[in-house]
Length: 136
Length: 412
Image (cartoon, rainbow over all chains, first blue to last red):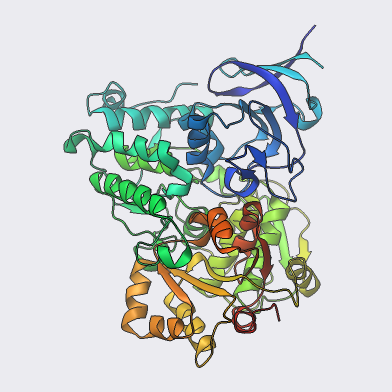
């Protein structure tokens, strides 16, 4: 029986993939090697790990406006997370998801980085404001 | 909840004003509904971050696509400025940037000009182009510009990433959420200072600590305990670092910032920041004795006063042969610095003065590879926070210590 998590209605198409979870924040400029598709900032909780095709589950966004363009650019090369699931995003992540057509949701009841574990298979329905944990 | 649209906005969405404005308002409605905005609010200025490292080929092609639409359909509706570019066509070869980068930059510039954008290429427009006024709604596209405009001037802007700032320029409005609303502007976090920052690097350190503690775009810090009113460059470094470490967009500083700070609920106990905390923050980036590859004065771009301080510190000295010293300022300040002899004094010491760029927006990763750079030194707390992901090891120090180190070729 899937576990259902409700959130605020989000952006982008319905998608399904495995989760990559950390209690850390996110900026495409600050944290990523966008060519290799990995987290490059040494102090990031996901340093060295690939984000390509994963559903990233993190706390919030860091400073910087570049992510708004970068998600689109990363998407054009297919070196992009499949979706972003956050406790609370800032405008830049929302604008970037809208421009880059990347699935994104936030605002859950509870800390989403506790509710979801790395490796969980998720299905995200942004229009309905729903995340299903299909298997763990 | 669907946003309330005026007749004109409905027509824009239906394409009556052409494809660029149709794209723009559709993007704004998607973002506005995500944040539960009730409607759109007219803005008086837009400011677009569009460096080509962020845009890539895909972003430049997107701009070029809109730029080929009929002129009446693509012209911006409000004065629209640009944030620093990725490359200065006068200095890029000296820094190891490539012809491919320059070519992409030229294409982006041509596309932006086709919209009627003013190519100011600056993140200090509040010091040099047109300072905002209190209550003015804006669509500002640089976190440092947003936090300074909101806090020091009492203007109203969210962080507007490049696509959203362009959308605001094309429609003349932006979704009314976040810092356009009174209820989001009340302080939520409380900080008390027991010491005063001694220079710009420490103002940045202080901003970094407050931002890190807040940790969210939706938190609004109130800072009290300052002995003297800070200067514009101090608040520039303070706000830019806070926005970088915390994604913070507004702070209150009673006696300095203009808005009355009314707490939404009970006033929280203050977090105290003193000399020991500032020293520890700076020391966390320390690397005394290490060889330095590049010293950077940027992020934010330098004011004329900062340019003068760099020139004074370099007079009669020579940057070490194995170290690059880069200074980035706005085109307006560069012209002034040329005219007043500051550029000549800085470059006589072997430093490079670039106009209209910022270091981290200029292919920093590729520059590190091309030049073999790893240890970077700067007086910008914002830059030390950003640049680690590009493979640099950053050190934070005062302007004078940075210059002494650039001359020695090692962190002193």
